[in-house]
Length: 152
Image (cartoon, rainbow, N blue to C red; front, top):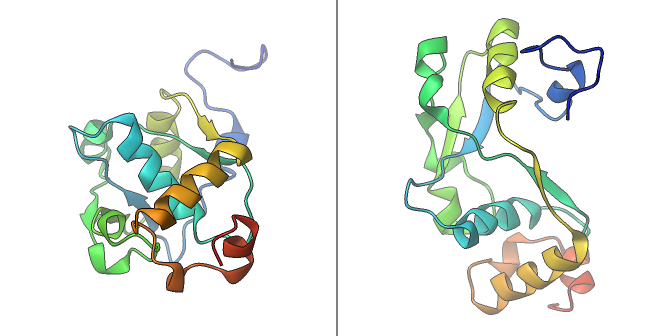
């Protein structure tokens, strides 16, 4: 829900808080069109598996069809994916050469989608399952996290 002071169609400044370009580039994981919710969660869990502790993880799934019209083109970069899940890493993409305006345009696209969360208790279970099913490579996970989820 938007704050009452926000004009229709405007995006609150706090929406950009989690979007931190590195060298004017943002990383994404492109979700296949036929992906179900379980696969989307696998992507989020793989990203969360890089942390050193279990905590709520937030994410947004948005339709990237509008990006090229804004001068934003996802570039596949599977070698740059650094999660402990090789399948997820193959979905890694970058938005290179980002400008401040590009970032604002991207936030506008993303603001049409609701933010989602995986709470810590569920994340623990999903991480355990990922390790048990060998989707997550334990050697690429933080030892503290593995201890916390009981998979050391």
